[in-house]
Length: 394
Image (cartoon, rainbow, N blue to C red; front, side, top):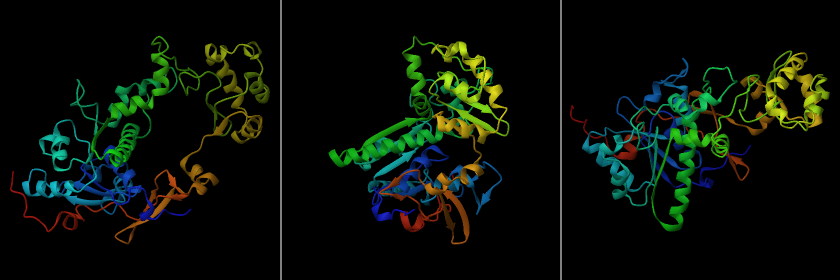
């Protein structure tokens, strides 16, 4: 699949100064970089973004962990001590000509360093200033750690996920960070478009909690308009608290089968050769009120055949179903190969890194980039000017 040249990317020519760390802010900056923006990552001298050494596994690649490489590719790195006036002055000069600034410190921290929105707007009135917090800038939670699992826990998602008797179940990845980063990227792109119309900068804010609330808008909207009744999770093969049988994931003779929609329970039962569900065929409400009874009957029968046998029987009859794949099985699929989501890049010309590209295509071309995550401070002199004297001891 063709790779879109840098000169054709929609944000080519824009500069982003990224003060953020860990995952949510850097993910936002990565999205903008893949769309063509120049992203300059500001890190602490000698230490850098703490994510450089926050290991998801024992995989170390050229001195940094795999997560850092994944979310900081296609960027530049400068080091600056925000306590040092010389470094702060250099950053102010950089921001004067920038289009976007991103930060994800706890409320009040970046302001104390002299780079809050009001201070930066005085330097550059046209700046688009993106900010991610844990729980917003006000309220009893504003000073609590804005960490992904904690945001999932406070959002209700852990309570919603799984079957009725399951313990609170988090998602198996940093979903709050990722959703907040994507939300901020969308807001920043919208603000940039607005600036092109009216010439004004903007403050764009989101939080991990807002991202998690928005993630649940489908079910929360139902809750808010259904007398505030809480949904009851299925006790059997739970998958969606508000959906009835057969919706769920079922064990087969050799794996798992995801079952979503069916033209009718009668059609499904006949295809599965299931007896004992006749009483529910003409009772649409039973798909929810008798959900667990129906799913238990289905589960016993589905376990008697292989996944491929069921797919061959159900899919031609317009039963919405799928095999449950592992990562190796996904990567071996024709659809995965045709989407071409992977890219290989080199760091320092020798260290090979296998990465994923941005999930969008423009004019039929992908947004792959050969630039690896930067070494700490590798672009400081080129971006901020000649090396400054070291900061005075604090």
